[in-house]
Image (cartoon, rainbow, N blue to C red; front, side, top):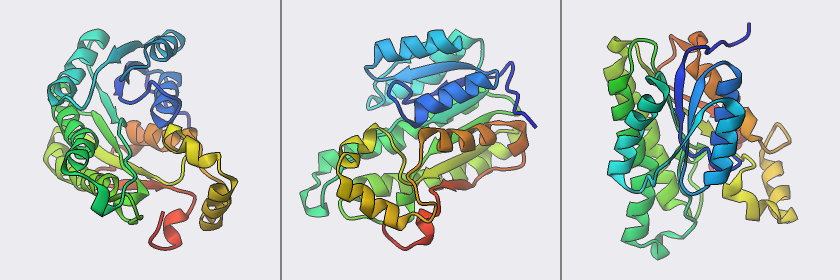
Length: 250
């Protein structure tokens, strides 16, 4: 059964770079949705994807909570409404607890959690029954990893955010879910992936025997945005090749 999103209007944040957001925007468009492609500073890449998919490119700095809150309305104005939000944009900070400043911790949470909440709240106000909200979390919401105190705690909060919003929005016919990627080949880990030792260590932890591709996560998001998932809400779908089966460190 092919997924058909014809007539749906979607906003995908963090789609300016090659990664989960971009793969998701492309996959939603291929299923028939018209997509607003959010980016921070990747104007040319976002405009190229918009031209390719028949969507629109929208710039916003999600560290500014007012800009985050305004983005769903801007997308709805450009698309004629809003049916789907994929809140994917985020930042990664690798620092030990003792070296993580208050300002750094606050910035990670402002973008990964605060902006996600503002986006979800405003998007829900624009949606009717059948609306879909999907947050990108991480296996680090359950699996602590040294150096990820800010990132991991922000992603743990995303899982709770999805459940809280799902409970309140279910009577309106809007579903809210999250996806938790494992080791996916994106810009987040590009430098680490260039180290053969890093790849060897990661592959030893992944039962599937490979790192994930952005399309692996985009496929899960596509499902959650579709009518096939109309009875799925308040859950986190793990997309990690079995990584989280192997222990406490992702």
